[in-house]
Picture (tube, rainbow, N blue to C red):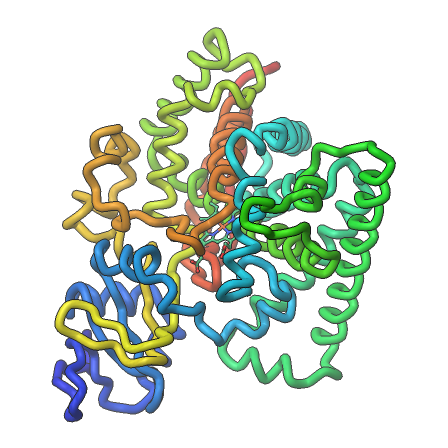
Length: 466
Ligand code: HEM
């Protein structure tokens, strides 16, 4: 790295190697400007464990060894909290799974996790396929559009329908209010964003407050409706109904009250759509850059969905047969992980090999940096879905590839995301081929999730008349 030098810090603590910026805050500025490049350079220069400071106070440790990462996320997870800087997220999500901590989180997790079991989410597959097919019907041959926007809309429609059931009116209202809230949350996560949040008279703050209030009202009224229906013995197959009834009798954990339910529903809305939308956007971008791999996806669809031209719409039962499509989605999340970094804060001093990481240190682990490491993935920048053979999956260290995190705080929606990713790729690619507009710039925008900075402009080609 330029402008940095390696030195051991003159204190009694033995710090791992790392960049020591000559000017205070210079590294922080560089990180804010291009966080992924900065972390890649640090690991390449300093190895599996490195140390640096943001400002004068905050000690950061970057781990880039699968064993260290597994120790933090799984074996010793009780020694860590999530980074406490996520106040803006908490304002929106309350005490839902993403933001809650400790015993409260763990007991919520015990009752929510079973509702995402692959067998219990199969019914949402139908919603995924019909929502994607409806979007495809609106497209026209030769049209150029921002595929990232399309994916955001369709995944939002899918998650709100899966959670709330068939109430279309609420879904639209939820969608609009949610978009305002998420744009606001992303804005306050930008440099100086916290200053904006502190000025309630600004129009953006007022718009946020209005949208948040509306969302809360809708979700509370849906909870009431669902409870009324339950008491009359008429059940729904939606996720809200499943959550409402969820409990863990064995562990003595009862049902959730309205406020807990509301926080969990908001959490699922937010965590459950932008991530998948990004994953799909990057997948379509990669397929547009790799014609041989794109042709193989279509070939597989033809063989699984019938005849030469993938006649029938896919179903949930097709998923195990769509092996190559699954590899494509997996490889896409290696190159462009929708969540690109995980942070934890040490509650007590923590030992990694010969180093002691003092209480309060921030630990960073990156789902982008680790799977770009040639020690684990040969030719790491190449999009090569065939690398994901059954044997390779068993051989690679568990935490060399961790797009969904791991341990008790790993992604509870992972089975939902896999199902959605594969079904949407299949439903869309059976009918459409995408061509990336060569004049359109592609750059990473790493906020909480990894977005394409300028959207993703694609021209659509209809494969054949249906
Ligand atoms: C490709 C899509 C997705 C990716 C890459 C992804 C990734 C992640 C990651 C990395 C975490 C852990 C963060 C941490 O440890 O700090 C997480 C947590 C979570 N995800 Fe996902 N996610 C995806 C889709 C979904 C979906 C579809 C849902 C819900 C329907 C969902 C719900 C959640 C929830 C509730 C948590 C918090 C879990 C907890 O702390 O107990 N995610 N996700």
